[in-house]
Structures are given as structure tokens and as C-alpha cells.
Image (cartoon, rainbow, N blue to C red; front, top):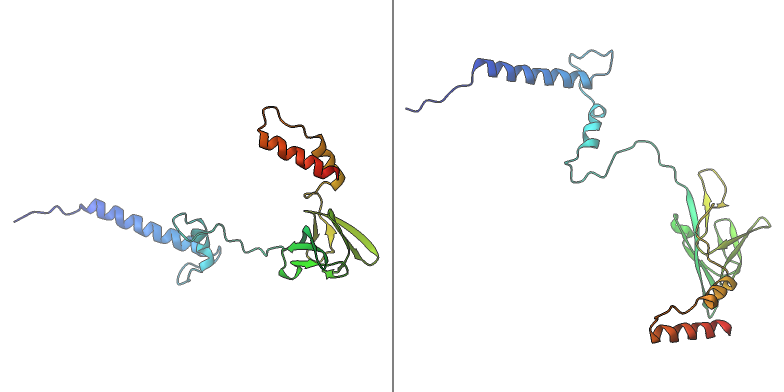
Amino acid sequence: MKHTRLPSLDALAKAAGLAGGLFIGAAAFAAPSGAPNAGSAASFDAFRMIGNLNIFDSTRVGWVDDAPKVRVDTISFVGTMDYDKGRLAFFDSSDRSFRKALHAGETIADFTVARVDAEGVELTRDSKSIRLLMGQQLRRPPGGDWAPAAGGARAAPAGERRAAAEEAPVPAGASDILQRLMAKRQQELKQ
């Protein structure tokens, strides 16, 4: 007959005390202050932190914030294209309805496209004109009005690009192909 050792009464008492302490602590944590603990059901809100901080959850995407998200509408001028039917201006936006390719005279948001050229687009609204260069944006905060965004990317005007290309020296030790390509580019810019 094999003898097995039974856990001591001290170990059982410690385990029961620990389990009871955890149960009482969880009930106290779940109960709002000033509310009686007896018979009250813990709400999910009391345990929301556990789900938010669970690093072992493979579907976790970060802290769950109940605050409403502030959405700022943007319209970005992303480029132009010469086409048989005229020049097009391309716009991208956070709102799907403002993602458009427009000719002069067409509208986006409250603006009418007055002119499209290689460097940018001119938009008019209420007899006011706004010039957007490639990469610039219009922003509209909630309840606000459209305004050009501060900063943002700006394309250099064609004259500045030509001057920079003409001044670019051929690097010393450049391959024959690179030298020919740079010479050809300079000839194209002079035309």
C-alpha cells in the first residue's frame, strides 16, 4: 500500500485565507464607494481596466477610450494632369465625397476651381481666392470653416526647379551614362 502525504492543515488554512481575501478584495473593488457590498452585482465598468491592460490578448489594439473622436475634415491637393479635354486637378480627402479629379469650373466642398496650372490650383468662394500648391491642404475643424493648413509640403515653382537643375554640376567620377543623362536634361530645360 502506497502512502500519500496529505497537505498540512496550516497550508490549507493559508490557501483558504488567500482565496477569501482575494474574493473580498474583488468585491470591494467592484462596489462603488458608499454602497453596501452584500448582494450587489459588480458591473462590467469596474473590470474594464483588466480588458484594456491585458497584454496577453492577441486581439488587443490598445487602450479603449470612451471619449468622442474629433474629426477634422481635410482636402489635399495632390497633383495635376494634362488631358485631351483640359487640365485636371486631383484632390484627396478624409471624406470620400471630396476625393475628386476636377476641371476648371467644377466644385469641391464650397469652392469652385478657378484655374489649374502645373504648379497648383486656384479655388474661389464668395469672391475670395485661395491658391493651393501641390501637397497643401484645406482643413475644416468641427463646426468651423475651411482654411489652408499651416505648413505642409509645397512644390517649388517651375522657374526654381529649372534654375536648380541648370546649376546642378555633374559629380566627379560620374559614369558616362549619368553624364549623358544630365546633359540631355539640361538641354530639355533650356528649350
